[in-house]
Image 1 (cartoon, one colour):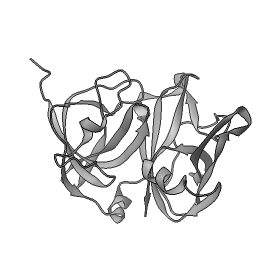
Image 2 (spheres, rainbow, N blue to C red):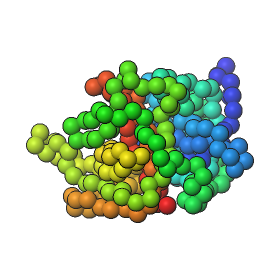
Image 3 (cartoon, rainbow, N blue to C red):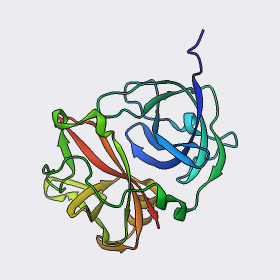
Length: 231
């Protein structure tokens, strides 16, 4: 017999972001109109990424940010600071049961505070990572923040001097008085900005879903902008 279905959770999708071998889906669980906490559906495979076949609606379409989705889940599987993880049941389709307008996010988003601990940087980033041993399970790994202005997207080649011509999108912003340069993994933003010339692009007021990843090969957990939603 297969694993027993534990629950069908309704979540407001706030990330459908790029991840090796699939996507990282995450959102806030809804109880009526009230948000109860974050849920990140994961596969049972070691990399935990959600494959296209596992995240489809019955009509074959892809979940979008701001969809309200009913997702069949098997069991919670917290690991380290990623306490929001639930193993999905790949035998069932997901179902879209509603959607939110961006203005409805105002009561759900943080407008001050910090994005976990700061003071560590990658070669191209700023306050964009944390040593794995410095993470705190109580702090979780997902945040929704509101930036009322000052968000810039930087499009450039990250490793040109090292023979790597890959271009990426990076978010540059202040939150809680701290400046961050964090890589963007939102496919919709990449599709819009990577075709443009290298440079900086200023956005208006925006909601950002920020994720703290699992330990990388450098033994640090990297902060990522998993979604950008115009306010």
